[in-house]
Image (tube, rainbow, N blue to C red; front, top):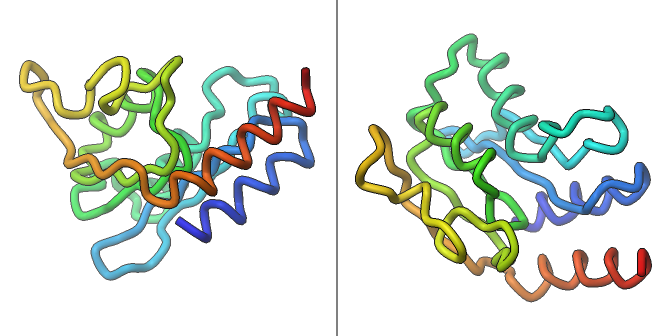
Length: 143
């Protein structure tokens, strides 16, 4: 999570919301990393999780990320939860809860919905205070 926090701070240079994600392989190596780049790329799908998943799949040459863990500084939204499930990622670890758009237990619980064909283990609140602080600072400066 500390690596993801360092990456999240890089998003500040592009005016993007400071969120970052890592896809970690079963061996502990980083397979993919991403940070929000919606502003930079003018792409509404350029969320940290989506970019990290794309990089990991490209590196492995396979979209099945069945042995991976996704680590992200903010609870995934519905779009990102869908990408996580589509990639068959079995475990998600996140920092701050998102009470406005969270889809891993706060507003929705897409990642653990038994009606879907895949589910993920969810571990929330890791380094929650640090992950939340970078977001609060970002939005305070914008207002």
